[in-house]
Amino acid sequence: MLDEITYFTMILKGITRFKAMHNFLISDPYLASACGFKEHVPDRTTLARRFKALYAFVKEQIQHMGNVLMLKKTTAGTMCSVTQVKINA
Image (cartoon, rainbow, N blue to C red; front, side):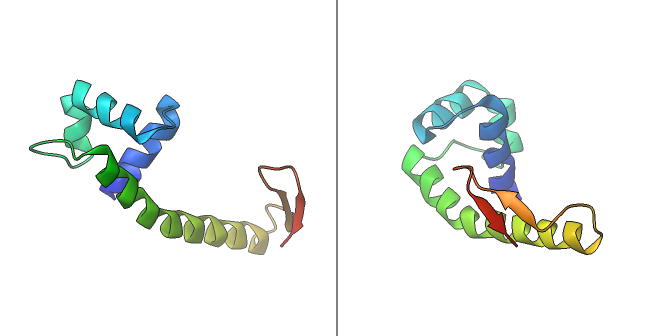
């Protein structure tokens, strides 16, 4: 859960680099604590490794959410990727 908080913080703040996230967490001890870093903020390379593991979780959650929305007929079974290519589910 703590990695997810850090990930969403990056999205909300528009932070795209781990070095910038590392510096941001150092400058905001309250947020660093909320992300689970009690004593110190890990190195930027450690943050990057943790996010590689998070990718599979996020992908699985997005797929599950899409399936639920299609079952409830909330959305159609098509979507656009970030490259604007239409994908049929």
